[in-house]
Length: 233
Image (cartoon, rainbow, N blue to C red; front, side):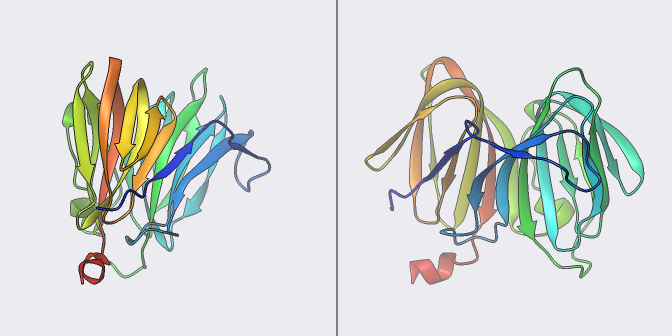
């Protein structure tokens, strides 16, 4: 297995001013992009919307979007239908959907956003939806709703000192730490884990996670890599 791993965090986000249709200064950090990955990722991003802020209404014409609310609460509108959302909720946005997000809370609304390339070809199986509290519902298969290669979305938790391994065998993984602490080992690479740290595992790599004394919580997404056969050959 390869020891490659993409490490990023939210420590130095960009301030985004004057986005059309948006209100307030949004902060964002790119955690991973398509470059260096075999799977059909567009981007993995962390986004922070200030109190009263808005992510302006727009039409998804070339991407599917899967987002998980990490903190705060607000209202997401999917094709004109409003849904209240809070920490732990996931929003699955199909290609062809028009949506916007308003922060209605007293604090910042933070979310993890995964975008995947798509075409307006009617391949979404069900369409856009809100999934309540991933921490309680358990693993979700976004492809069953949206089509596409993202086959797993979950909120994972390791108890104090517990360990878990992730192997990118035919798939690629992205993980975003939401609480607790720990360490990841990928070959000879050691990565301290804390809230705001993201790991993305390219095809053919692996990482072992070890939770700290306070446990470790993270959002985990798994994408089937179409380049798997070529890489194996």
